[in-house]
Image (cartoon, rainbow, N blue to C red; front, side, top):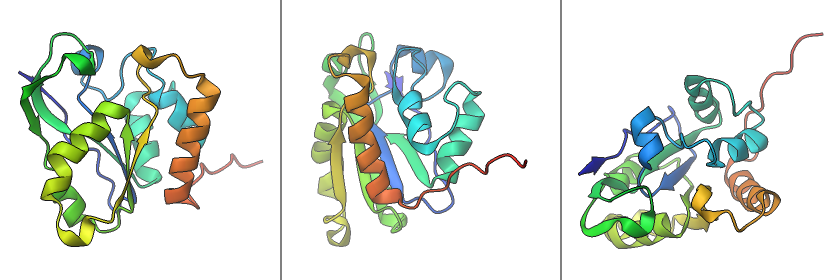
Length: 179
């Protein structure tokens, strides 16, 4: 069985980004989106204006500053390799995402990183949401995975930017250096 990570949970999250399950490179590095060709950090860096090549703790801090929570739908599953298509659905167990969304009413939307994350959310999380959270906006975005390279970076960036800005406007920008 593969096991996902604990959530990144800012003090007052406004948005939750959900993946399906960390890939092999991420599990080995113990870091979200660690595969060097995964576009997640590049996209978020471009949108939130931070350096996506900076050390992992600083990237997490940038998300925290922007009030972005990060987690995966699945707590554990069996899956040979990294492909979402290889997840053995009978083994899939959900993280406590419904509980997180219930305890964090400031989260106004959920962005699913790819089709599998959205399908898993609808199957495993939405049925456990309380009635007051059923109207929560849940949006499927183009996957940042290197396995989904058919969409150009600029098109992915436009989709991700629109989704983040609709939930985070105005979102914290880095302080410019003093002159």
